[in-house]
Image (cartoon, rainbow, N blue to C red; front, side, top):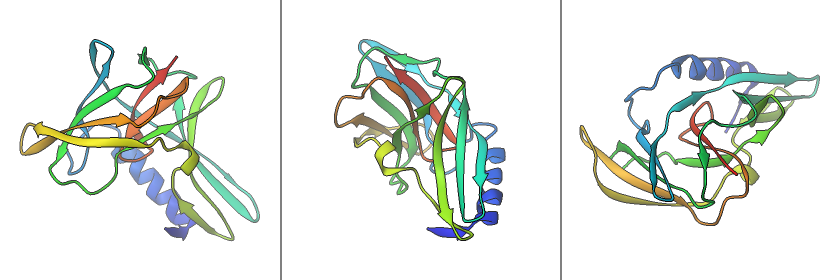
Length: 172
């Protein structure tokens, strides 16, 4: 999708501001659990701040997450995630890798030139997964299980429906 850069700023700010608290909005992930070895760990939302770089001919937008490492660490390289969401949801659930820096973790969410930018997570940061419905959830939702299709490399990751609110974790 291509949109004007000023539209991206409005979209991103609206997204970040509306993400200040977890909601039960249609399509939101709820009751997210990391199954890590023999442990079942309740995950929490992490909310991004925004950083941008706009030049004469190009622009780039990033979502930035505080700290170089997520507090939640996985002991296995093939963690499993279970969550609830609307039955028959159509938007994808992403598992993606952050770019880790000394004081933050970030993901590029838009890049463009000539006043236009494409909103997307870089394909080389998206982890291939398998998704399976495993039963009924609460309040007319369904429960799903998501797994990476191959072992994750050590690093910082995020599970989410978008890149501005996510459930972050790290693999050592």
